[in-house]
Every structure is written in C-alpha cells, then in structure tokens.
Length: 103
Image (cartoon, rainbow, N blue to C red; front, top):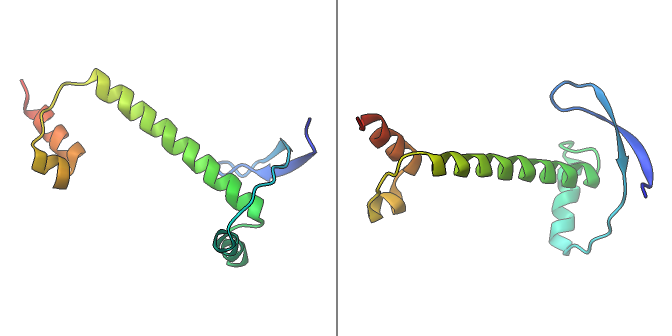
C-alpha cells in the first residue's frame, strides 16, 4: 500500500507530522523539469516532491476557498452588473458596494 512513512513539519504549527507516502511516476517536458529543479536549487523547496506536494496543497486550498465563495454567493442577493463591469471592474467590490446600499 504505502512505500514509506516520512516526517514533515506542519506548515502552521511546525510540529512534525507522520505521513505515509507513495510514489507516482509522471513524464515531464524538459522545461518543466528544469523549472522544478531550479525551484529546488534556489532553496525554496527541499526536493522536487516537496515542490509538487506544495502545489497540490495550494490548489486544494484554492479550490476549497472558491467552492465556499460560490456557495456564499448562491445564498447572497442578486446583483446585476453591466458588460463593462464584468470586463474591467472589480466584481466583488462592485457587488459589495451595491449590496451595502440595498435596503
């Protein structure tokens, strides 16, 4: 099932966390591999796996936040926007401003 168990510092608390890990082999273009290696060489990440795992954690958090924002928006009031506002405006600021002015 799992190939090994590793210790990782929790990014928020700094406490070491035991994580069971497994491997996945994926083909990468040369420029992507060079980029990942450059990120590791810069000291930003310890290993290529650290970099990929961090990207996945960040994407999960982003998608979770997006889902929560969409659910809140579905429960919120309807705010009509012009085509220009959709194209060039700060949609959230416009909607917040209009919502705050509603009775």
